Image (cartoon, rainbow, N blue to C red; front, top):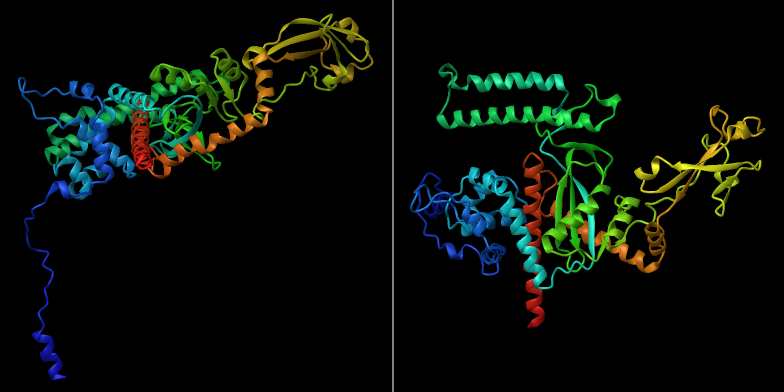
Length: 497
């Protein structure tokens, strides 16, 4: 036993000393491998025309000022961050301190998170033009053709909770307190803490006041779109993100969020259009998506494919007018049936005579045309009203079945004529070829949504407001296109060799 203790004393063990300071020489160029994604992103962004970003830099040798960060650096950092599922500016700033890829991109320089956050949301026009520039380059290389484009929408949560929704009375109470706190910011008796903490509090109070003022504006917009019974104090908006709307999600629940629309080119699955809206439904987003693509790429898609949410008569007719082949859900358009005023007798018992443009009821009385029906414009249909004479219907033995409560006019019904575009659409969607093309939609455009939500982690926006969320989606879609462009380039190079 004594011998064992003696042997243990003779062993030399290097203990961990975490109290010491150390200097290390780092070869920045060797922080990441030659085939690392960060290098490919840096090289690809470097080939883009970034003049608009450089024009926004105010500091110069003549005017002076602190040197600004290179836009190529900030763009590359954000693109790489989104590719790794990082959307927080604070987290990106932390990664620049220790993550080898971020250190390589910044050249071991630290980037303040305010700089990153401001750059992400303050260059909307420049970012939109950059996204367009990438699409033009991809189109030139034949990776984007617009021969077939898939359209789909998804809901992404806003930076707000359902508990943040308030009615007008509560919003005004919070706004009054916020204004009072902003007014008290210059009082020396209320000054506590460091100057940096003081600036942060002032900024937070001003932002809170701005959000509450915006909440009142959004409340008025909501009331304008609701009917008279709902214009009262029942309307509510979020105090955290006033422009967010409570949207129904696929799991049956609801949460504050935005409706995100993506158009994907079927050739290589690249995103050719993106928008963020407050609309609850998708049917109003198809034609704007076409116009956006035409504006970006100077040409229209040859064919658009969308699901039942977009398959309306208005869109079918609109696509026909734009001379774009449209494939949609064959079950989305139900053939309307003419019906009597009281819905008692089925429409089939009324016989239509096209040569006289009259209907004949089971008792042999005629129903004459009485102009267009009010619903024809709303539903995108050609609908016409037909009315019988009250003198024929009054003594009729079947009045109780046909129009028992109609004491002023005779019985009536509505005849619907579908447009040639709708009839042609139904005939086309009945073919096996159209159905096969329609089934491709899910694996093209829904893949884009899945990639952005799962790979990029963008299930909830990191910013607030319609403009800023639109910009975050542009960043995500730009990242998606650049990432897949790198992949396609490698595949083409491997195939060529």
